[in-house]
Image (cartoon, rainbow over all chains, first blue to last red; front, side, top):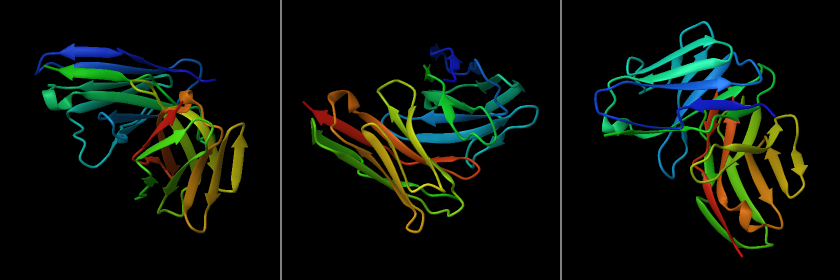
Length: 116
Length: 109
């Protein structure tokens, strides 16, 4: 099946620094990728929809200047958490589908961000 | 927008028994309903899905039913095994995925 990777899998950073998370579709092209945030024992919260070649669509309440998304190619989307604070500590997961008609989403393994 | 509700939030069953998890949705335009299994610290894995033009789908011990009129769909796991223990999420898709709140399933050996 299709594979989505994320890097890094775990990052610890100091408050005020920026962290970039990469999401790659390894064996298919993804026009659209989704970024989710997941708190412990909770569901997936959609943060934004990343569209290749255009601006990301952010969900209500998600600060676009804080969570910068770049979908530069059909296989790569990046999420940058700028000026991270402890409250940004969370599990970030991306997903990608292989086409408009095929709704099947493949999830990345997630990135655990800890901000000290 | 779409609102997906999932019940129960926790479920314990004896090994070999069946488990049923139910989800309701609000947007009649939703046309795709996947179910994901997520083990602790790992990515959600698609286990079964159903399109709006189908009422039931089965894959070995797992089945999903969809009632479009009532706007609800259910996951059925038969002959449960300890390795089925995980958190299960339902989702409904219109122009994005809306996830249920999850069900923590524990299968007791």
